Amino acid sequence: MSSTPSGKSATWRNWAGNVTARPVREVAPASVEELSAAVRRAAEEGLKVKAVGTGHSFTAAAATDGVLIRPQLLTGIRGIDREAGTVTVEAGTPLKRLNLALAREGLSLTNMGDIMEQTVSGATSTGTHGTGRDSASIAAQIKGLELVTADGSVLTCSEKENPDVFAAARIGIGALGIVTAITFSVEPVFLLTAREEPMTFDKVTADFDELFAENEHFEFYWFPHTGNCNTKRNNRSAGPERPVGRLSGWIEDEFLSNGVFHVANLVGRAVPAAIPTIASVSSRALSARTYTDIPYKVFTSPRRVRFVEMEYAVPREALVETLRELRTMVDRSTLRVSFPVEVRTAPADDITLSTASGRESAYIAVHMFKGTPYQAYFTAAERIFTAHGGRPHWGKVHTRDAEYFSEVYPRFGEFTALRDRLDPDRRFGNDYLRRVLGS
Image 1 (tube, rainbow, N blue to C red):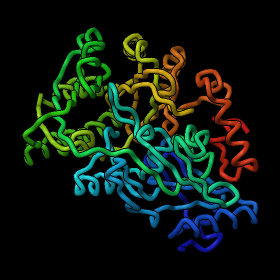
Image 2 (image 1 turned 90 degrees about the vertical axis):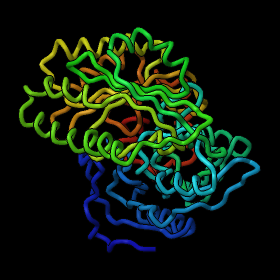
Image 3 (image 1 turned 180 degrees about the vertical axis):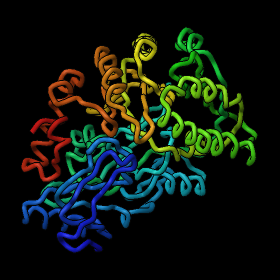
């Protein structure tokens, strides 16, 4: 087990750089037994414990001044059960490695988010999701979990074993224990045809119900200060494979979506008045294209431009109204927003604190380029989202607290009661959890 000498722990920073922490020490356990021992030792010393993935959360969900657990040695596939259609992976496995390993085995997750840098446990614990009419978040594809609880013991759960823990721990925000392994439902690898095309804001909002109903995976980006959107529809395909060409892929995904977009944002940050003009050009830069490939190559894309993000889930039927209010707010304000607003959907699921728990949901994500003041924009957007009973993503910027969550999550009390049972001394607590779950 590697660990930094006590007192010499480095400052930890998240991906966006908006959260920092100074743990007493960092520990990288090489086994579940070593992790259990680290939790017990922390308890003896009266220290808090938090596991951290790749730091892709914009909240302080993983921050601690106690013991920071780094799971990079807890990686890899433990086993594949083809008959049951499951794969069991160590918690520190990056989604990228999981997707590559599954593809080699002729398997795939049913749905996923749009980046794959995160660890499987970090992504699921915060409720990371893609877009889907019938298929839900990554956490909703979990069939079993193994976690180390506050007394250092190992607990396994599934629909049949400890079902109350399973209902909550799939999206546990690190409050119930440290996840050590996850069993996902998988299926034989399939092909998706992606159709990307520009569309006006008015057309997307007018036809949203139809676009949602006709496509397995529909999402779109609206460029503030313009009436322009980019839409993406992903549907299963009989083939043949027609991947994005190397050159056109580089031009669209690297040069335009990352390179030129980064420069445009640097200009916008220096000269905010130029942002509406830049937005108008950006929103027309990407042309329509269609391609067919295996799921992770269609669902995910590289994101090299750093930003800060807020995302709320609203009831799906409230999406269009919420989005129109957001547009009106931006148009009437002096705000200058250089990042597009991302819209996705999810079916209802049965996970206690999932943003889609018990209701069909639509997600609206607002972003600001790293280093640009974001508070005024996010505050105004959050006011609109909460008026519609919005539930914020657990890993993205928001100002909500336990009192608010007890109103928007019918099963909130179930989660906090389970936390009282599994972690009565708040070994896994931190400031963020105190705010969102109560003390």
